[in-house]
Image (cartoon, rainbow, N blue to C red; front, side, top):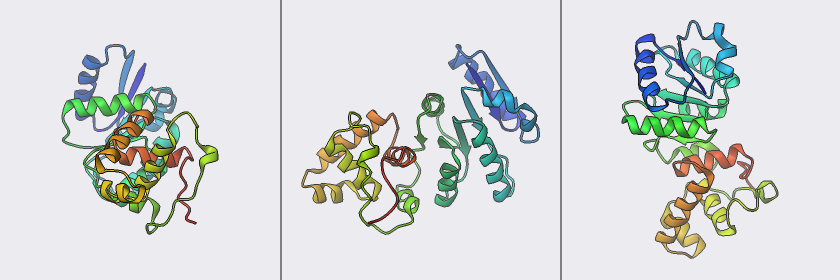
Length: 220
C-alpha cells in the first residue's frame, strides 16, 4: 500500500510520521509539494490514497490543481480550511472523494483516510446540510426516478424512498410527514442507509448516490 501527500513539506513530514504509526501495513509514504507533484504522476496514480492540502493560493488556480490531481487519483482526500458550499460542491464535481476540514481530531482524520482508501465517500460532519440544496441548484421538486440503475439488493424500497427525500434536503420531520412514519424511524433508516453505502453522513449518502447514478439531479 502506498500513500501520497501533496502539501507543504513541514506539514507533510509530520503527517507522514503519524500515518507510519497508524498504518504500519503501508509500504511507503511520499511527500510532494505543489511545485513537484507533476514530476511524480506515476507514483501518485499508483497510490492507495492521495491526501492533498492546498496552499493559500488563488482559488481559481487551486481548483485547477485539485482537478488535475483528481484525474490522476480516484481516491483523493482534500484537507481544506474552506467551508464555503460552492467550493465544496466544485471539489466533489471535480472528482474529490473526501473532504475534511482542518483542525479535526486525529481519530477523525484516520477515519477519513480509511473511508477514502477503500474508495468510499467521506464528508466532514461540519459541512452545512444545506449543501444538498446547492448540490442540485434546484428548488424542492421531485427527484427523477432512476430505479433501473439501482442495485436491487443494496437498499430496501423504503430506504430508497428515504434517500430520495434526503436528496431533496428535507429534514427528518419533513420526511416523516411525507412518508407517514415517525421521526425516530427516519433517523434509524438514515443510519442504516449510511452504513450500507459505507459513508459517514447524509450528505455523503446523497453524493455517492448521485455519482453512482442511483439518483438523478433532473427534475420532473
